[in-house]
Length: 225
Image (cartoon, rainbow, N blue to C red; front, side, top):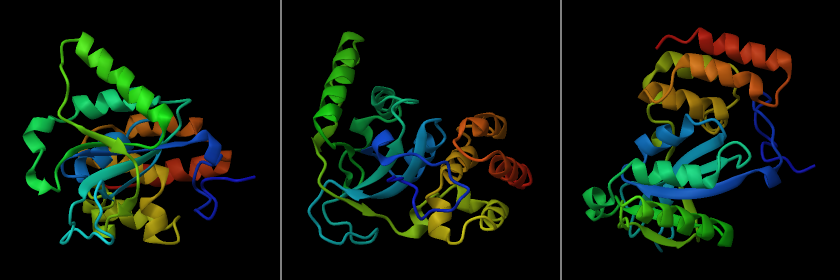
């Protein structure tokens, strides 16, 4: 059985790869969008990175023609792509960021397949019917995603050393920690997009053993924010 979480810590909800979808979005500096989407039930994993360009090995200091983006893995059975796209366009103003730092800050949407393209067209049509007009967003086929440096992953969560210290007790490496679903939620909490109560209410819905859920809940209740 092919699980998307294979190799990750046992404190993770486990889903089949076939259950998940991935979408890549650019809406300015990638720190805040990662927290914005990471707090949402149904979003399983978030990561920041560089996409949309041709530079072979982009870095934060030498991004080339790439754009700062956030990549989401999500459960469409819980949160539909259309819902994510509505939040994407409601969450930024393309005209305010496009070309502010060349292509670094760009309203960008990367279509992974025909299904995603159709969802984009549907949401765009809804926006037109609502009188919101055509957003100045570059919409292109997905080609590649280059993960950003670790200091740019879960930026807001990392501002709370006690949270990182306690989470490190159940994740073998920092990479496993920042790629976890609970880190995505707590990054949203650290930014103010959600509350601890909402996170705790969601946990019992995750496909995990009862003991693991209790241990995870107990640990995050102890974090000093």
